[in-house]
Length: 229
Image (tube, rainbow, N blue to C red; front, side, top):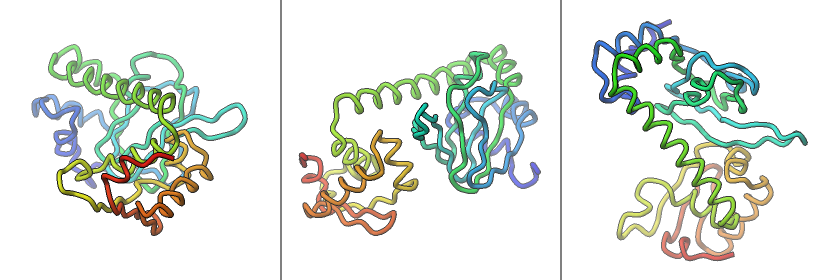
């Protein structure tokens, strides 16, 4: 029920709607549904037609596809306040990926029609939507570059060092909490789970990290950046 969450207040704090006025937010909130998804629930399948897009309130969702050989490839891990599904919504074509909750999650589903109405009314909203789609495209291009140009170890190190504080001067030790299971992260980095685990092991042997479940302690950020394998 909408009583569980002040939808308009939440939307107003999402990057996509930051500069959108209260009146517009109110209209969007009226056409927004709350969705509860248990772990393992598929929000949409490859081949579905999108009638709107999602914003994650809490939990986690993976976006991916299954290869002809049955292997699962994760292309994005969605966290709280992130949106997904906007691009395919505008195409009027079947989706090429699936979206599945990896933990019990709450989401907002924003209908396509209300988005189209606001795009007609509000150029600021249109620019925000374009900006969000552009950031996602930039991220996908960066992924392709990483898969093509970086070794598996470089991809893992880049993932570990992407967090807050990693680039601050004087910070040599850092604790990183993995935001998903190792299998999902491996798939996101275009690695097999075995290869991902082997890289973590070799970084541990080299005295660069310590691994305890989903917590990874970086012992020397500068040495980790310079590590080659």
